[in-house]
Image 1 (cartoon, each protein chain N blue to C red):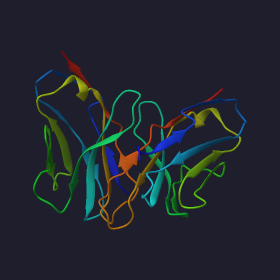
Image 2 (image 1 turned 45 degrees about the horizontal axis):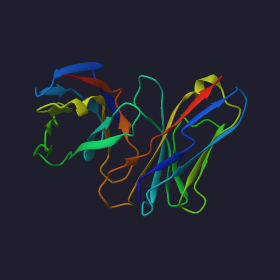
Image 3 (image 1 turned 120 degrees about the horizontal axis):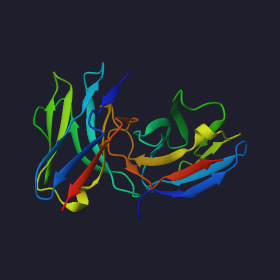
Length: 115
Length: 115
């Protein structure tokens, strides 16, 4: 079974600063995906960034990047140059690499951005 | 195509009543997923479909829950004899089929309140 742990229920960051959200996971699979999803208040969840576990290079999407440490089963999200629109719940999730399988989510981290 | 849609957005019902939710996925997506999200938690997987075939059901899906996707397009989730513990946000997601990039697109959810 796969499990995901997010140990920071809430985080805050000053606008234009950088923040890192933590995530650890456990899986018996050798190949899997890792994801960060963003859920803005009263809006639907959207994918922020995705990492295939067999790829050593950390994924990057504009201001969002990950630090993937496979041996430590750690998958943190770094948001650079934070913007007010980044305020949301952020969920770390994992799924099997076979593709298009159900996601297992953490409990989420609520990010506040201070102007 | 404007994305995954869900109806109704909100549903208030009395304990013991039956409710049905509908999800319309992105038109070319073969896979459709149902998740449940309670306050302060991440989404939890309930069930998913490949076209009209139901591939997997979570242990969370009690006998009072049933899901269908009769023509491989929209899906319905029915809860019979609702209980207060069923109060939650019910999320639907869809994705392309096997072998494609594993990104699930989420709908806005149906918020169920059982009185």
